[in-house]
Image (cartoon, rainbow, N blue to C red; front, side, top):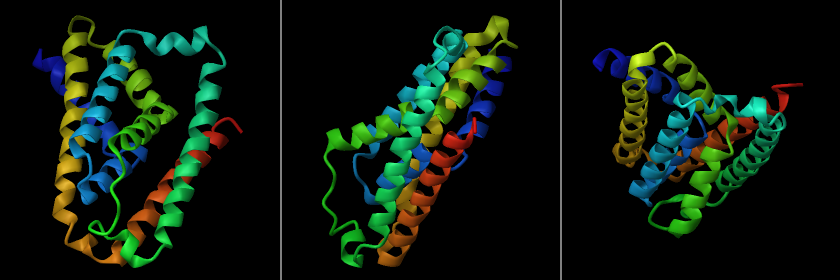
Length: 202
């Protein structure tokens, strides 16, 4: 079991540590201390579902529905661009609006809706979880379950470490300038991902 679990864990960690839409959102929620458990759990469970789908062979769905990849790619790009522009807008607001104490917390429903959209409308997530993890899992015919468990464990460990570990950075983000920089950085990440999605088949 370990011979398949460890490779799955390492692959999962190597794919998930890259700066992306999910990670940027979780970091921001962790810094603000808003709905951390719900957000981390939503991202981790979503990853687990996609990993199971990939290991189970769902990677062939694009062959069955030829327009699926294109629809998801452009839909995800539109959403990420809108979120990125929203972050740029937040970056230029007054300092008082960027401090965690002064900001009005978003509702749980709205937060989870954003979290789910950042996960399920981002084709990069499918590439990592469904395609890559699913493809590598074929090397562990007798241990696919353990491999999938390792990859899912990586998602749970990383998301919860990021969400709850973000509090260590709160002294830095006590300054409005740091929040502006974070929002601007998130905007750059979201718009860059959106651009790569649009230009992927250009």
